[in-house]
Length: 247
Ligand code: ADP
Ligand code: MG
Image 1 (cartoon, helix red, strand yellow):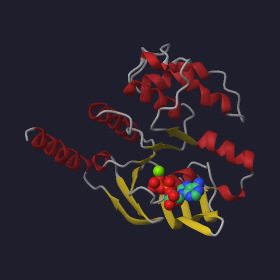
Image 2 (cartoon, protein in one colour):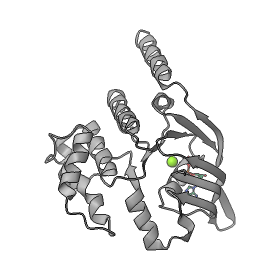
Image 3 (cartoon, helix red, strand yellow):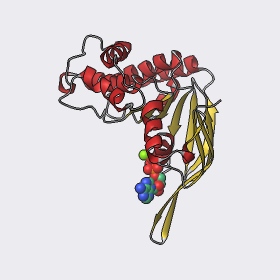
Image 4 (tube, helix red, strand yellow):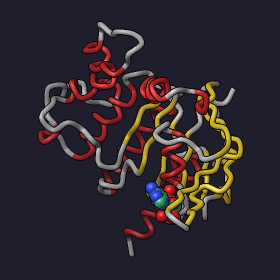
């Protein structure tokens, strides 16, 4: 069963006499274990699609099944529960609480989990931070961490609920090249451990880390392809970097 399944999903924004067809018709299926990049020009509908996948918005028409649940039938509070329990979010700007330690930031999603009270939240947050290589930074506040480390905290926060998948919107947009490579390598490592990742990215460079690339244009998916040989794609990119650094 796919984790994400869309049939005929449309999202129109109506503003007076004008209707913007942000998503025209999307049919999409993403299985457990995939690592997907969603690409495409500005205004092509990527964020609108992410908002629907992330249960922050509902389609104007069509069906979105998340992990076998029909999101259309969910009431508003159930919808929020689905979002909190099934999805880990990573944002471009990290979105950490600034006066809160790394481990407390990571614990936060556990407090929103209304269905079951979690008594071992601290342990789980520590384990998530260890997983992203920050086991020695538990009590640091964001200003004491580098940009890459802050994004690692955000990734740990996304993982702590054991979500069905991670949704990342331009997660490396605020990072320098070196840190970007480091964060993408971390995502790749997590994906190798079986975590499903859906990521919006502008940077074609990111394509070498993922397993599948979906390209959007004018509210439609215009290309959807598997990256068959990630290792080769990485080596090609590395060779390209070396040749360009010598220019
Ligand atoms: P992308 O993320 O690929 O840049 P978006 O999903 O943000 O694209 O936008 C797709 C289209 O929908 C654009 O034409 C945009 O102007 C329009 N749009 C997005 N959000 C809204 C909104 N809240 N109200 C009206 N139009 C919107
Ligand atoms: Mg966008």
